[in-house]
Amino acid sequence: GSEMCIRDRVVIDPGHGGPDPGAVGIGGLRETDVVLDVGLQLAQLLQNRGVQVLLTRTSEVDVDLPPRVSLANRSGANLFVSLHANALSMDRPDVNGIETFYYQGGRAYELALSIQQQLMAVSPGTPDRGARPGRFFVIRRTVMPSVLTEMGFVTGEIDAPRLADARYRQQLAAALAAGILSYLGQ
Ligand code: ZN
Image (cartoon, rainbow, N blue to C red; front, side):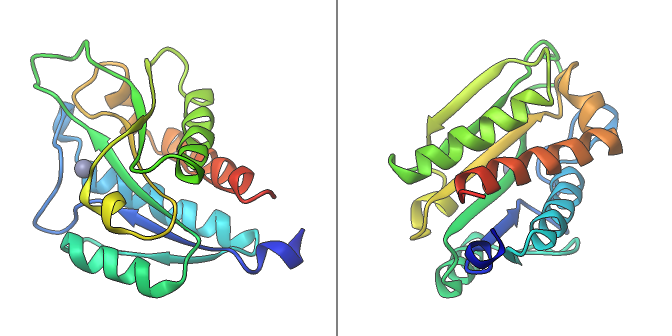
């Protein structure tokens, strides 16, 4: 209910930005554009449900990793979600899939699993690479349950056309929101 969710505070971390486009894939598809669009939509969806949201960036600017972590740790947020897209070589369009990393088990694992399940539900046919342990800086150094999700391969023949599609990005944002709200008990 609304009395409960008003206390929830979420940090959304769209990876890369500005001079750092992140991965660049099929047709010049850029990770930074995908994750910013999904992140902004996700923020709106959560705000509509009464969740307080902090974004580590809201435009095409480059933010280093330590300031992203400090913002999260200063914020008193109860969870942190970093948004990324994967890439392999342009010679490997056969590699596709979605995966969500957590650093420590327990609640972060629950959050990763909840998000992963929702992302897979809107992404039929792409491999489920699972909720997995990872050691990325932003999830290792943040103090709240933190996950980093790789929402498909910009070099993948299944994932890339979807990530380039505004309607699919809208579905990804809705799936992330559902995964987060489910974790928060809404
Ligand atoms: Zn990335």
